[in-house]
Length: 317
Ligand SMILES: *[C@@H]1O[C@H](CO)[C@@H](O)[C@H](O)[C@H]1NC(C)=O
Ligand SMILES: *[C@@H]1O[C@H](CO)[C@@H](O)[C@H](O)[C@H]1NC(C)=O
Ligand SMILES: *[C@@H]1O[C@H](CO)[C@@H](O)[C@H](O)[C@H]1NC(C)=O
Ligand SMILES: *[C@@H]1O[C@H](CO)[C@@H](O)[C@H](O)[C@H]1NC(C)=O
Ligand SMILES: *[C@@H]1O[C@H](CO)[C@@H](O)[C@H](O)[C@H]1NC(C)=O
View 1 (tube, rainbow, N blue to C red):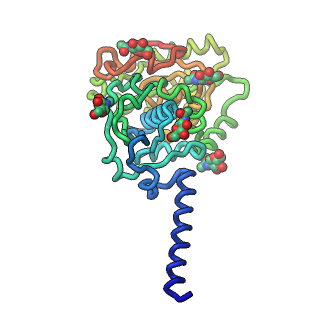
View 2: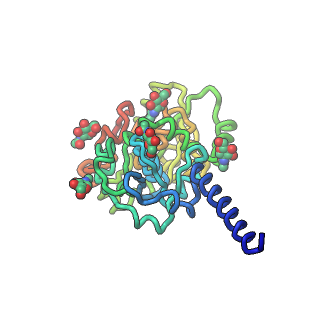
View 3: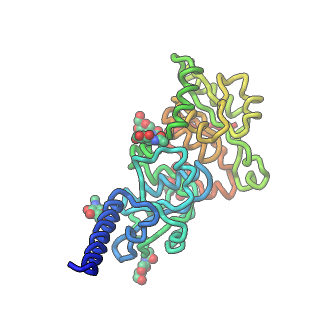
């Protein structure tokens, strides 16, 4: 064999190796750069994605709903760029999906999902409502109904990464008496106090709501141990410090969420972060019934029975 043939053979071998490596990676969910091979734009094969908007709580809805819709319809999903919060906080080794690169976002048809805090029944049979092999949901997809058939799977996705687990476990071990029933209280304030957000309906609960909710929890669990986390710890300490048993020592939202998730029961307030704290704790949940504010533009997109679980307990100020 002369060198030319040998070189040809080497190139062929190299190609075979590269191709087989690529196909192995396709099976075990490829990194971004292989996506062009993984997601050919041919009729019949559909791929769904979702916008990545907002911070942790919003992203948790977007991801869980996308995955739920994909699994229920037997359609593959890809994760858009921008879910960095999720991947930092949660150990998603058990639920990896292909990633979309930034320049691919433009190739997706955007399907508007207008009811932000409710369920769009079109997703029950999404094939009937899309004509594009690549479709991206544009909306917040905030309803447990998008993923309730796959709740166990989503719970596996939302396992905290080691550092968050360790931080919370240390607090749980050293600062909480063993015989007490833990109740996490999430106090959402911060930007929600801004006039322009309040006008849209992003209300904050008054101290009377938290007091009433704590009384109700004490009726159910007389030895309740209340743990408060908030993005306004100054207000929380001043207003709830004397009745709560512990204030979160953390400053990172991910640590607060892990702490609240580790509690047995929840008192939540406004916003998606609060909602997920209740969902993760998965015990008795009391929620603030005046969020979003009645008559606001946000409340127009709310279907209460699709946003809040039936067995979550509404309570006002
Ligand atoms: C799901 O789709 C795959 C191909 O994309 C097909 O092989 C499989 O049979 C489908 N499963 C169901 C339950 O429809
Ligand atoms: C998809 O395309 C067909 C043919 O053009 C059209 O009749 C149908 O209404 C479209 N469906 C949707 C959901 O856009
Ligand atoms: C994620 O979970 C796996 C086990 O499922 C574990 O081996 C790994 O260390 C975890 N990683 C982090 C960052 O928590
Ligand atoms: C919580 O856990 C129970 C099982 O104890 C389950 O039936 C329920 O659907 C879970 N989810 C929520 C959001 O409460
Ligand atoms: C709210 O959701 C329920 C349950 O999905 C549904 O029956 C009802 O029609 C919805 N209400 C509105 C106003 O859309």
